[in-house]
Every structure is written in C-alpha cells, then in structure tokens.
Amino acid sequence: MSEYRETPFERALATGDAAFHDLADFAPVMIWRSGTDALCDWFNKPWLDFTGRSMAEEVGEGWTEGVHRDDYDRCLATYLGAFHAREPFSMEYRLRRADGEYIWLLDNGAPYYRDGHFAGYWGSCVDVSAHRDAQQAQRILINELNHRVKNTLAVVQAIAAQSFRDDRGLAESRQTFEQRLLALAGAHDLLIARSWEEVSLRAIVEATIAPHDPGGDRILADGPALMLRPETAVSVAMALHELATNAGKYGALSVARGTVRIDWSYRETSGGMLRIEWKEAGGPAVHLPSQRGFGTRFIERVLADQARGMAQVRFEPDGVRCVFEAPARAGFRLSGRLGEPSLRMEGG
Image 1: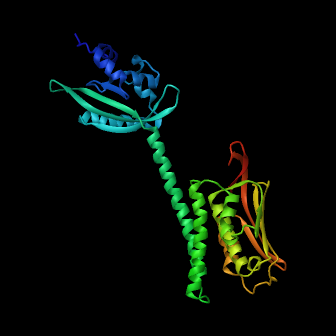
Image 2 (image 1 turned 45 degrees about the vertical axis):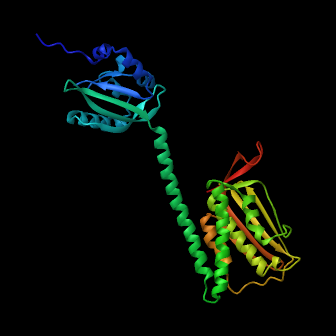
Image 3 (image 1 turned 30 degrees about the horizontal axis):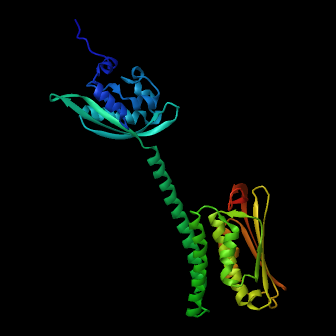
C-alpha cells in the first residue's frame, strides 16, 4: 500500500495555530509558506486580499498564475535554485493584483527547520512599486541633467570663444564674458524655481531686461501669457541680453530718448510657432556693420539651433530689429492666480 501524502491545501487547512494566524493576518506584509516539496501550502490574509484569490486557488503552484509572464521563468528559477541549495533568496517580480494591475514586489524567503530537519520555506513580500518608480524617475532626471549640462556647456564654450577675441583687451573680454554668464545664470535661476519645467515668457523677458532698464520706462514689452520649454527659455533670455547689451552700447539705449519694444505672439501652424520681435527707436543712426558681430552670430546660429527655430537681426535705418521664432504647440493650463488660463508653449 502506497504512503499517503498531504496535499498543499490539506496542509494549509492543518495550519491551525490561532495566535499565529492572527499575528500573520495583521502583519503589514504578505507572507507565504512552502513545504519540503517546494509547493506553497499557506498564505496570510494580506496576500489573499492582494491577489483577490482563495487559499485553495493559491496553494501548490496556483500562486504562479499571477506572476507576470516576463518575470515567470526568472522568478521560479530563483526560488527553486535557492530551495535546492537550502539558501535564503531575495528577488523582485510583478504579481497581479485583484484589480488586474501588475505590482512589483520584493520577495524574501529563507529555509526553516523543525527538530533539526528541513521543513520548508517562509517568505514575505512588500510592495516596492513606489521605490522602483522613484528610481526610474531618478534615472530619467540624471539623463535629463546630463543633456542639459552638455547644452549649457556648449553655450558657455561659444560665449568664451567669442568673448575673448584677439582684437579686444583682457579686461573688456572678461567683463563681456561675465555679463553673458550672468544672463545665462539668470535664465537658469528661473528654470530652477520651476523645477526645469516650462517657465513664463513674461518672467524671462522681465528678468533679462531689468538690468538694462533700471527705470522700467525704456523697454516696453507686451504679449499674451505664454509658457516656454527650458531650451527655448534659455535661448530667448540670451538673445534678449545680447540685444539689450548692444542697444546700451551703440543703439537706442545709448541715448536718453531711445526706446525698445518687445512684442510676442503665437500663431497656429502645422506645429505652432512662437514669434518674438525686438525693435529699437529713437537711437543713433544705424549703419550696416562690415561684419557680423558675436551677438548677431550667437542669436542667429547657436541659440536658434538650440531652440530649433530661427532668428534674424536686421540693421534698419530707424533702429535694429530682431525677429526670433521657435516651433511650439499650444495647450491650456492654469498659471498664476487660480483659474487664470495661460497658453502653454512647448518646443517642437
């Protein structure tokens, strides 16, 4: 006559220590047990509540039906490998929750013994989805930071290459370089305050022109409430700084009666387009330069390339005009006071 062996379900029913059950069912973790045959024969209430299945459905190999198919082979290989070696294990895998969503769990198991003899494994699981999401967000943040740092270094490199020219004294070159770095830093300060998300175009304009118009009556800015992506925001800030610096040295801001208008608008195209126009008036007579200066090249090439747009500086007789455009798409969001809509601008 063959020897009778209990099934995992019968073993689960035989686990009758009421005090232990109460403790395990109120534990803030999912607990499981397996016998010497590697088959699971008991699960606590948090496990059953999580899976939405009964003890009869989970015991034996039933619990594996909830393991994500992409994790199934690795999960069983880790468990069975540790089981045969009688070693503890720790692994992460996705298990189907009662609502059908797969949740990442950290499963720790270890062998236990009775009277010196191997009796099976005890294990516990905790939800680590939030931790994994945080790690993923951190990886994305680091990659994004690397990208932004490379872009910023490229801008700084271009600034340095053009600021320290052979035809300019060291003191003047240093002053020019520092001023451009301060303008770049000012744009970054606004972005940092917004956690490197979109930033108000008006805030960028006001912060950039403030040092060049202490009285606030020489540079007039107007346009709808728009939001810019970081790359476009930095480009606009640097372009405005170059234009304001040039105006203060040679253009409208170099004389008492000169003024500047900055107007911006958004137009719907196949991809959407942001347009900013700088126009000087009341300054000295404008003469077409014999060669393009750093500021002009910087605006038209480096910054326009970074914003994936275009910029054009025109030396018109009545004052310098610059038109800066960048691709954008619009969507409405809440900005400023509660319930006040503004148009969100996203590059590309």
